[in-house]
Structure formats: C-alpha cells, structure tokens
Amino acid sequence: MSSLPITIVGAGLAGLTLGRCLRQHGIAAVVLERVSSSPRCNYGITLHPWAFQPLLSVLQMDVTTFKETLSTDATRRGTGKMTGDTLAPGMDTDPGTFRCHRGRLEKLLQDGQDIRWQHTVQDVRTSSTGITVHLKDEKTLEAEILLGTDGVHSQVRKSLIPSIRLNILPFVVFNGKRRMSNAEYYDFVAPVMEDRTILQSRHNNVVLEISINDFTPKQVDISYTYSRPAHEYDPLHKPNRPILAATDIPEEFYTALQELKQLPQPFDMIFDPTKVRSDRVLHWLMRSTLGKAAEIEDLAGQGVLLVGDAVHVMPILGGEGANTAMKDGVDLAQHIIRHGTRSLQTFTNSRYEAWKKGVEESEKRLVDMHGPAKASV
Image (cartoon, rainbow, N blue to C red):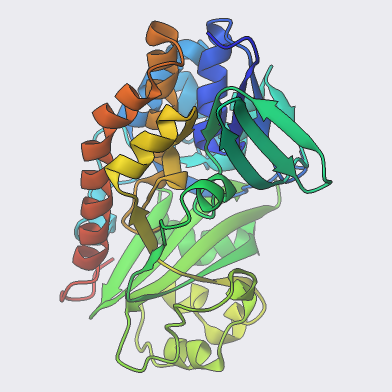
C-alpha cells in the first residue's frame, strides 16, 4: 500500500462513498473538493437497492433507518415512496427504490473524513516519480495514487485524457425549483401526490415531472422538469452553450409552457409560466460519454483512476449517475482493500463493459421515456 494517503478528487457521491469505505478499513485518504463546506444539494435523487444496500454495513444502519433518515419526506415520517404507475414508460423502479435527499446523504457520508474544502484542482500531471496536483492557489500536492471522482466536468479527466469529449444528446430539458406554502401544496399537489414523492406526466413527447425535495415546518421544497426531444433548428436546444449560461432561459421556453393546454393538477399550477418566471430555472444539457478502454487502463497504470461521472457520464434524465457513482465507490474500495493500489488496471478491466452498458442503457431510457404515448399521470 502507498506510504502517502490516497488522494480523492471530488466530494460527490463517488468520492465520499469511496473515502468512507476506505476509512472503515483503516486506509488513509484525503478528499479534495473545490467548493466550501456550506450545505448544498437540497434536492432528491432516485436510489436503487443495488446502490445503497452495500453501504448499510459501513454506515451501521438497516434499510428502514436509512430511508427514514434520508428520504425527501423524512420530516413527515415518509420513506421516499415512488411507484411505477406515476412514472413515464421506461422509468419503472425496482422494489425498494426510493427518493433520497442528496444533501443529507452527502452529510452522512462526510462524517470522519479528511475533506479539504475549497481545494480547486486546475491541472494534474503524471511522471515516473509520481503524480503532481496543481491547485488554484498555485499550491501543489504530490500523490502516489489519485482517484478522480470529480464529476461530469472532471478536471482530472480534462488534464490527463483530453480526448474524451462530452456528447450532447438532442433533448430539451429545463429544471426549476420552488418553495411553496403548506397550504398551496396540500390544495394542489398532495391530492395527486398522496404518499409518493414524484409524479410524471407525458403529453405527446413532452414529459413533465414534479418531485419533493424537502418538507420544512411551514413550506415544501419541490423540483419540476420539462423535457422533450429537440426539433430541427430548435431555439431551446443549445448544445454549445457555456457551462455558466445554464441560467440564461430563452423566452421561447415560457411560450412552450403556455402552449401546454388542459394540464391536470398539479401540473397546471406548477408549470404556470407566470409562476415559473419567479423560480430558479436551469437549462440542463443531457450529456454522455465513455472513453476508450485502452486510454483509461493506461491512466490507471500511472496511478490515476477515474470513476463515477468522471469517466462514464450518463444523462441526468434516464441515467443512473448517482447510483453507479456509489457502486463504483464501494466496489473500488473493496478492490483496494483486497488487492492494494497496484492493480488499478484490473479494476478498470473488470468494470469497463458494465460502464459501457450503463451509458448505452441510459441513452435508450431517455429516448423511451419521450416516445409516443397518451398523456398520463
């Protein structure tokens, strides 16, 4: 095992899961994260049993406690319930799947870890003597083993395998967040949501989604998503927009909402263009990619391994990014515990086909969920 602690870049789900599993077995790791330790990720994600159950022994929790602690409706004694009959085709769930509050999950995983907040990686270089990490403040860190878990826009990947480019899939997606009063929620949303935490409705090829992020004593935090396939010369499809332009919402989006006629509640109220204009709305790009096996394996031979969204990017809709990130973290930790850090290439070889299949299936789910069908709730 390396004399230096393992360096993990990125305190997202892959990095935190990996670090927490290594810590349980006494393997030192330091996590570099570009943002501050302020609370973040106040939104729900879908978690499947195959992703979270291997973590339960590490967290010393049973399934019931895990869900009661982390579900998006935990403060209402809920368990993040979601059912296939309220989801678009292609989005059916496994038994035990639930909606989890990502911020609370990350906070739970952070416990006891050596996380260096506001450590922004600008460049990574490898040599015969090791790995050098260049940080934003002109400081450098030396590492023997570096695990890149820094997400879709991974700086580790950009530094060492710049040939891996993100594919932008031809879909139009806008996501909004709203904080509504309890009275408004119970008048319009609760009668249809009942004890569930997510609803989807398809109107021709437009999919509308409403999901619970959190319940507070006086308010309810929700997310909503408008998505459809892109048209030719589509003013809402901007595959080349800068990353920081996600908040630039075209007027045509509000026109598209206005054209949605006779929506059932709660979709009519949530997607009311007048209300949406007052919300925080983001233009999401549906990205995917996976590098070539040979280049990923070669990098692993230099002591650098990419996992999670840093290497196999799935679209936000239809993808299983959070779940596969956690699975990567657990599986890689187990590999290191059993075999040490000198056989990282073996890990990439064993996972590559599963990564490839996951990306392909996520792209197919995105297409299937927008296929022709009647409107549904």
